[in-house]
Image (tube, rainbow over all chains, first blue to last red; front, side, top):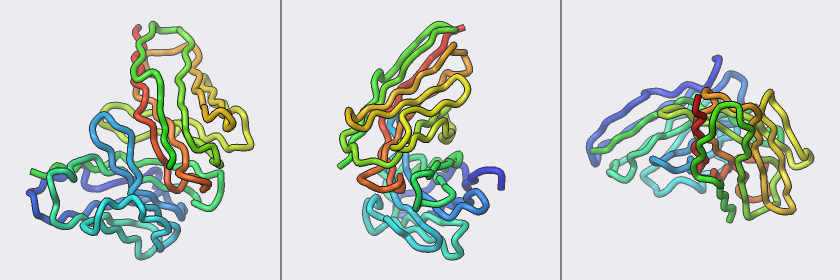
Length: 116
Length: 114
């Protein structure tokens, strides 16, 4: 596609529920990243995929968070037993490859998650 | 652990002024650094990616420099316009990787007044 797309744009859920956030990267980009951004702060890294594998998941805050990219394109970020502190904008980015210094990341519009 | 700071936190200038935004990082073992802009309620737009082998990178009215030894990068905006109003973020890699794990600064909120 022309750019990184994310769905849904907004998600409101209740505490304790399960949510899935989807990211469609730029076609041909092998690297995909998830970040989350709280109000007034810069994005915070969550996880990086190179192809189908999670090459770095050091930013996932706890085991309630999980992400997959089974075919090396679309990725889903899954959050179990949501908590109010999970409320944030979840951003997805992609780049041509993560194994080069020419690694310009392109971001999607984000999914705003609100946990009531 | 990489830490990124940006000053000033906010800046308001009249249209037409040239301005400089500053970014500092603590771990200089980086291969690249990227500048973004973010409009309210929107995602990030890539402005410039500077590799460590480069000292400067230019795109239109934007010029970014990188000084690894001092742990600093600057974004220079020439002849500012109201459309430049946004939050500007810099991001440096965590450790000596190619930017897979970006650490972002808190941003500089720029207002350009007509």
